[in-house]
Image (cartoon, rainbow, N blue to C red; front, side, top):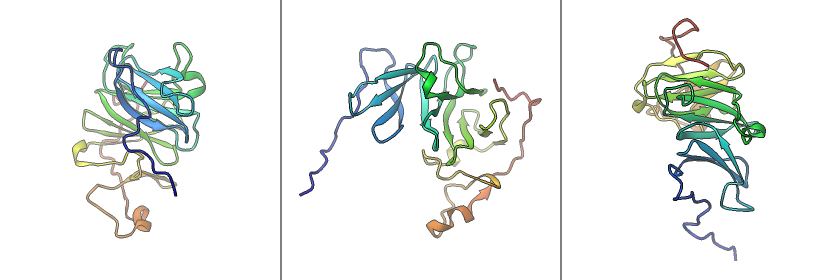
Length: 216
């Protein structure tokens, strides 16, 4: 008889004695390892085979990490977002990290993408070619992360509450024809028709490097 998995199994617990140590987001690096974001601005690398506590720490932001996600095709890289900060030391940015160097003292991100207001999320497209961010200025931004120095390829001035995206960005398609999205109220008739029913994001507010878009 197959053994049942016990309910409410604790796999990780943050330290309640550390200020802002609450967890904010997590993702799987592989079958045994989690990346766990914290209110301290750190991301913990938790190997479930050895411990329920982080075996390594990545200091990604000075304040709370909103989201963390590994690159869908290359587990060496992951992206984080932060909602707070105005100074150079504490910026509202999406940052791409290399796990091989992120655990070193004073790590430097592969790239960092500054935003005018606090970020609410940053996620890769399914193949990792693009990064989509949501921000408290009610804009979606799509970045081509093959370059570390570009402004967003597209900005969509929609109220964020009118859009819903799965945490794995299943509604974002980075095919050869570019990034596309569909509204949450446009359900495809069949699962196989998802890509065919996606509508191209319109770009009425295309920004270039001279528009004041703040990119580091």
